[in-house]
Structure formats: structure tokens, C-alpha cells
Length: 134
Image (cartoon, rainbow, N blue to C red):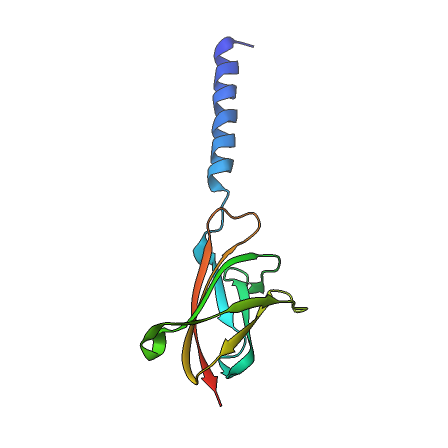
């Protein structure tokens, strides 16, 4: 075998590895979506808000995400400064995350979330609007 043959073969092998690596796709934060399980929640000090985290590419729920930021406020009613506490609760349904909160007033509430999904480098963020009802 000639040296030129080995060099060409090495170059083709390297190119094949580079093309394989380049074609591997990674998910982006925009490939995930938070969805309200119910868009209307009874107002009161023991309200439960449930959200589902879904992989948009497969429409499957995403379990084991780490939700590290939550904010619930009345921005839809023009009262962004009116916030309430949000406490995580356990959930048995895959991809569903439940939170206990005090929806002290009827009307629109904005729920902002940020989460880390296993294996993804970007932070998944969501902003949902729910209605607190009588």
C-alpha cells in the first residue's frame, strides 16, 4: 500500500466522523413547552396549579425536569406587582408538575417557570395565563 492511499483513507475516515457528528441533532429549549393542565382554577388559599412539560418533537411528556424558578402574578389584570407564593407538590402523572398557591383574587394570573431538562444545556422557560374562578 502506498502512503497516498493511507492518507486518502485517513482523510475519508475523518470526514465520515465529522459528518456523523455534524448530523447529530441536539434539542433546543424551544423544543419543549409548558402547558396548563387546566386553564381555570378555583381561587382561594389552597389552589392547585398543574402544568405539563411536553417535548414538542414527540408530543410526549417530560418527567424528571428540575423546575428551579416560579413566579405567579396578576400581570394579565395590570397588577404585575401582585404576586403569590408557589410551593411544589408531588405528582404521580408523568410530565405533570403540581404547585400549591394562594389565588387570593379572581381573574387572570400569569405563571412563569424555568426548568432544566436532563441532557439539555439550555433552560426551558414558559409563561402561561390561567383564570382564577369563583
